[in-house]
Amino acid sequence: MNLNRQFHWLNIMSVGVAEFDNDHKQFIAILTELETVLGAGDGERAKALGDDLMILCRDHCAREKAFLEKINYPDAANVLAAQQNSLTQVQELVEKIPCCADNALTLAKKIQAAMIDYLLKGDINFKSYVEAFGFSDTGVKHTHTSLQNE
Image 1 (cartoon, one colour):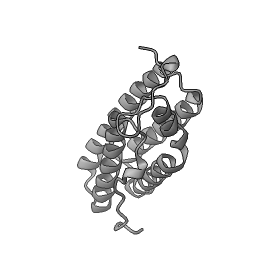
Image 2: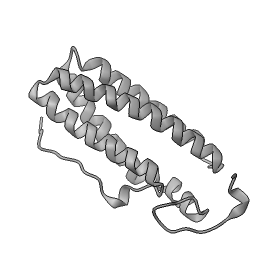
Image 3: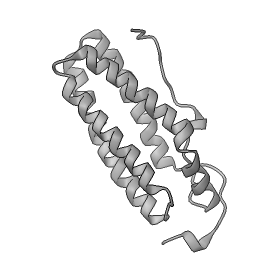
Image 4: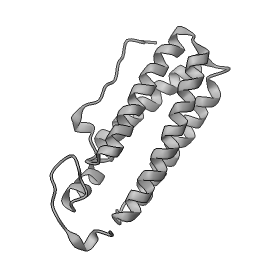
């Protein structure tokens, strides 16, 4: 396996909400470090990173669900389904770390590639919505008060 493949944040991955962009940056950073330590055979550090990733993932999903409800995002069910799939994969990764480092490494790479693909392709409608209705705090702001639930 090519351990030299490094993913990094690109501004095009932004979803228009700084809080969630910061989470996504952390996901990428943790997964990148996890790949490195799994490749080096550092099981103790890998376990700690896996635990950090699971905590971040659960927290992110809860906060984003609340945000989707607050803004009445029309495609929330699909976003939440994708997040549930991610949670399942991260849980599987955490379970593989202690016993199956090679399988965990493969899964970590798969999760990271899928996440980046989703940010670039799947979250485009979310980004457009938050920008169009004034919920973005990182990009263009338009105001459409009938959808804001403050």
